[in-house]
Image (tube, rainbow, N blue to C red; front, side, top):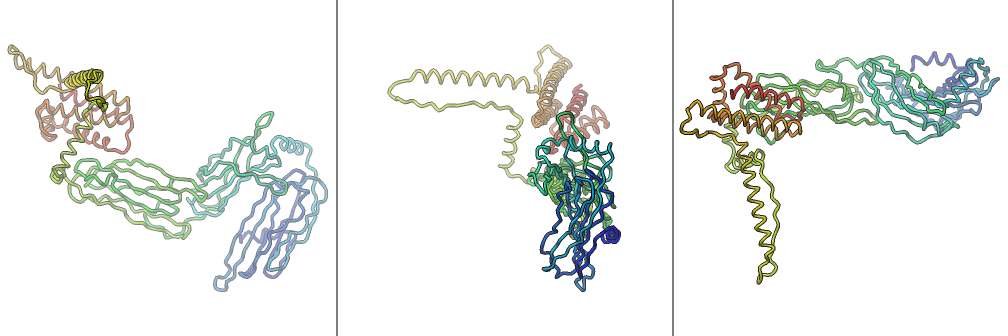
Length: 580
């Protein structure tokens, strides 16, 4: 702004300098009726002891339509050691002459340290517009009578630093503000524009012109230099047809990031903090079992566009693509909140395992320096399954077994009533008959549930008839197994359709346990050895990959119907091959 000052002063027709105060007003050229022009007033106060006591007082503007106004203040330190400071205020009005002819513009007044400073009045000519242009402008004026203005709260920002823009409408008629709709920003590649608040403000009035804020927006520039925002368009609903109006082109001065950035700096601008934790800290990490690691980045700045620190690969664990969750709020000072990345890892060894993330650094625009948060890590004490079981007490083992039964076995819930005999000297036959009826209902329900349970239970052995051979007996058992397998698959499909994914994994575990019992194997290791003997090493590798996928999906923080359907298809393919 300081470098542009000589050029601006060259255009000023009235310039008065009183010691340490400079007051200037721009020259008006080629003014026409009903056509807008900009009027600029600059006030410079040099010195720390100089104090502006009154606001800028403009002359009579009744011969003009005031379309809009804006102001900007800059503080320039000329000499820090001597305490020389220059306070520069730039005021701008958008005016439209009402009548043609010679117009006199009066003095602009301001009081500084008890002394009144003013500019000399001047005159300029206002010409009539050409006939076609006048008709067009008057027609447009009659149709809409609404003007849009886009301005920035902070016009100077760093690259990737959010800037707040305000869209304001001006009109003489309050009713026109209700007609403004369909506000649109033209897309452009050098900025990202996100609405902060689209609630209209209260209507304000200044010099006969009413104004209303239509929306507040966050503008995120991704390149340095002077960035020009495309005009904002809107529709004004009239009685005949909607009229499209456009705003001005707002400019944003984007500064380059200073030198000295860390090697691991990506594009984070703001104030941030990073933390790493285990998803469920109460659970003990187990070898070959999924563990959720949560990386949380919180603060204020370009949260939605910055590069998150990634997990570092290691032979001690396998990591998968994280689930990203944004918990952000758009406020007047920018975007704030947190971004959560949930990683699923599978430890490959027991003992201490360190989960490391990449270095993360950011630029703090308030302190104007880079901040390096370093590497964030989490140390897991991974144990084997036998170590976890041995560490549990007897009560904990009983509780685990009870929880498994309650999660996998469907137990009926019976509603009971408290029956009380009011008169002990006589028998209430209604109560007796009611109790007998309740007992019959309970017994019938028990037999029905027992019958259904037997249908879903895989028979371990089938007693053949005395005349049946061993081959015929195996055929009968395999036929029963196939029948039970098809029932289980149908049940799994119903659970997928109902999106009851918790019961889906429990039903699969029941099917897997029945199949192992059928082949008389006790644990997972023996079952894999059996598959290797009967189906080969390649099939065992496929089964191992499937087991890892289903464990990862079971303990994943989110489930999708597509992933569950893919698992169901793998279950059908693998287990049909196993029970052949």
